[in-house]
Length: 177
Image (cartoon, rainbow, N blue to C red; front, side, top):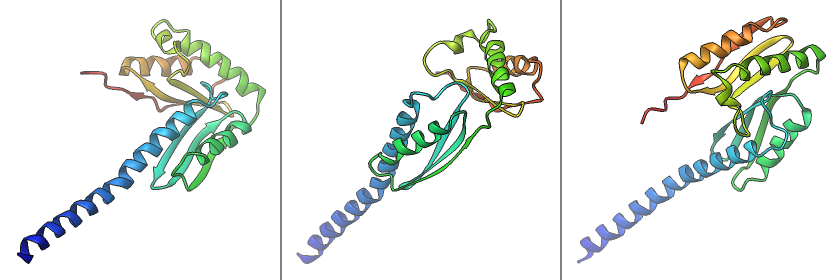
């Protein structure tokens, strides 16, 4: 009689341990979703900013580049308030202020989002192609639908006078169902 009772007790303990082991994974997934949401809701996050993050347990690392110092601190503050986040490592770089870079940003925006093939990306609040300019060097971040759009964005960026270099880090999203 004691052997079946012992077996049932061990099974319950094993299932409980498995449930506890899965709890942190679910918690990390929830934290990741909330971090993403909070960062996308930042009021001054624009097409010239690129903010991303990594979640490791209860720690969040913020990375990327922003044009405003307040955006760096705002990102850290909203992430700190998320339940389950114990530490925020803010590695976001504040891009240097430069009238030349500001001029390039506007020209790049018009060149990329003004292209008929890429105008579809200009719709909506958060444009998926991020234009990062630092000292005349351009990095394109974000997502596009296909390799052709990625190449067009690269060509358009390279065609802007005053741009020293273009690094195309756009990712192609596979929309096949």
